[in-house]
Image (cartoon, rainbow over all chains, first blue to last red; front, side, top):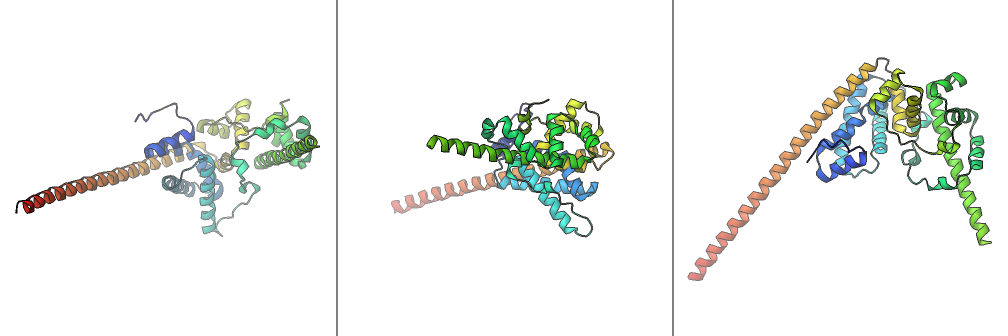
Length: 200
Length: 119
């Protein structure tokens, strides 16, 4: 088999190659893409480089074993869940030594990791969006407005609002997630009222 | 000002390792910074990772660690590959043995039936 296929660039393609050939080479290519990110996640929770390196290696082993057992569809989302659960378990083991930082970001919803089916976007109007932005809390509204509408960078937003990097990132992410929820609710209401009008 | 609907869309721009390291080092242009930041907003994995990566001041430590982890991953995979091949070879070995045994039983049965028939 020609292993050095440069054109293979999606995770799904690599997974399909692995499942069809059971050749671990493809898992290697796939996992190496995420080493830096996994290291970052482990560093966030474990706070120590050596512990984080060990954790990434353990997660890699877990992933390799699990991939033989289950057919994974969304690799990146699954990898994130496996990595975070592993780190949280490690933190729990060392409870007392380390303080686990629980943030709103720990709650990962399906919509965060799976962004298929954006059909609802077709019905979104400018009015709905503006109304929804106004429903966000002040910090989220400010950060969403500066980042998405005024095209400011995180650094600029930090300077303008006095928030730190993590706060800016969290406000933008949560703001975006809430905005989506508000807009989807409005689209549903709109399509329901349209149906009712047609029935009448 | 950018079209507001873009807020609801997720950027699918993949960010490579080097770009992320350059972002951490503050070496990117403002356009490139935005690409990375939009990606951070859409990827829970990257968003958590960046917080951990920012804790390390010397970015060379990160590249060294990544190299080490990848090296050990390669070793692990080679071991697994060897084990799989050994298992496969063992299976082939037992299949061949099985076929030989069945053939021998068939031949023996043929001779026994032949001898009994002559008697």
